[in-house]
Image (tube, rainbow, N blue to C red; front, side, top):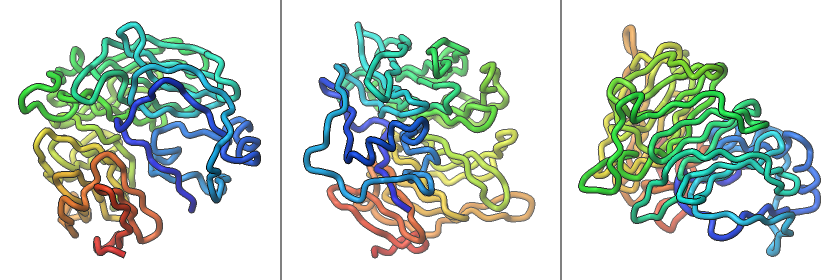
Amino acid sequence: MRIRPALPAFAFAFAFAFLCLAATAATAATATTAGAADWPHQRGPSQNGHLPEGAPAPETLPDDPRVVWKIPAADGFAAPIISGGRVIYGELENGKEVFRAVSFADGKRLWSDVLDDPHKDGFGTGPRCAPVSDGAIALIQSCKGALHCLDAATGELRWKANYLTDFGAPYVGEKGTTEGSARHGYASSPLIDGDHVIALAGGPGAAVVCFDKASGKVAWRSQDDQAAYAPPQIAVIGGVRQVVCFTVGGLIGLDRAGGRLLWRVPLATKFGRHVAAPVIRGDLVIAGSHEIGLVAARVTKAGGGFQAEEAWRLGSDRGPNFASPIAIGDHLYTLAGNEVACLDLRTGEQA
């Protein structure tokens, strides 16, 4: 299985230009095929940092990639995505968070949507949440909790929600001991799953909200956790389809059908800066941060429900800050500090 680097929810900004690069002639030719180059979520089609099975990838990258096209872009931290021949990305324009779609082939602008007033803190300003698309819709989310569902082809607004006004979620900014998204902005990309959209709204009784994809109506809402920055994920654990989230309070698993809490692993830290996406492999759910370190929880059925017990833990020197770990086979690849490490996924021992 070849892998592509996972882009963090907010780790870097576009400076002055948006570049489309061709690594090799073969790769460029393949990329022009509709759908062949889709990367519709910041962590890929399966949201785990992997290319799809059978997808071509260059074995090496040239020292001087060829620029296919280049367009100006202003401040922003949100990772761009590629879906249906469109590149969708966010930037700051005229004091607003704006998301745009341009042609993957030539960079020609297709549509734009003015989303919200910007958030600003010590990291900077501009959009921080990577967009998401399934080819039919595109989801864009602002730092201050505005969610727009757009027609992916035209940019027309289908429905919208606001975590602050609709669900009572907090937003304070970089002040005092404020935690999670209330401090640095709502940067956890929503999840498109079948006929639903699942988002970390972070409000009382609405930590996780499941929307009808077509109408935006709330199908269910669950828990009181404040939102952090890691995206929600879908996994089958113990034969049950679950939504796994890494919130300010820790790891939680919810029943996908109705949002019922199945299990919880408390993992609290100062400021709740939980950014890296959890890795789910079998009954292991692995998550961490620069303060927590790296923690593996084993989730199993117990009686009529589930239990989550710590399987192994590594210190803060092995905890990811922004970069999400990637699992391949029985190994976990992580970036902590200035080191890349390969760990035995089952034990946490360094390989």
